[in-house]
Amino acid sequence: MIVFIRVLRYCSLLLLFVIGGCYLKDVRWRPVRPARKTTYNVYNLKTTGYCPCKSCCNWKRNWYGRPVIASGPGRGRPKEVGITASGTRAKSGTIAADTSLFPFGTVMYIPGYGYGRVEDRGGAVKGRHIDLFFHTHNEALEWGVQYHKVKVWPPPPK
Ligand SMILES: [Zn+2]
Image (tube, rainbow, N blue to C red):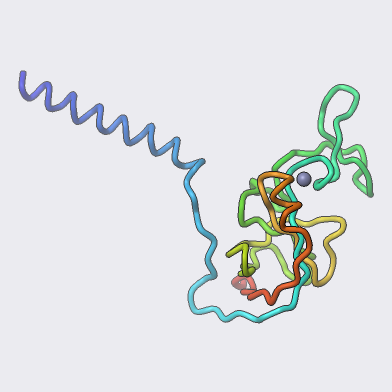
């Protein structure tokens, strides 16, 4: 009987870990850091903020409520809200940049924002201008337009 209880206790503990693990997989905070032994360059960049809203990400709902791209070359095409141009889920630390200058995977350190990784693009984000992801429109507005010396680690060669 004692053994049975012990096994039961062990199993429930295991179950707790499994459930907890699945739950945490989505929520877990994975900090962005540059790869080891890589050096950075410093760029003077214009930084702005954006969030997943309609006005920041150029989308609207079509007549039956589906999000579509509001204007530009992809106008009317389905839009997945909260998914970046590289296919990742937008989160704090996601950066939109001109990928001809800073390709996907570039790690940056922006004073006042912290570390981030280029995972997105934007129609208005060209040249020495990056757009920093925030969860709410207010936070994006609060950031406004700031010019910073940004540390840039190019992505590791494939
Ligand atoms: Zn917004």
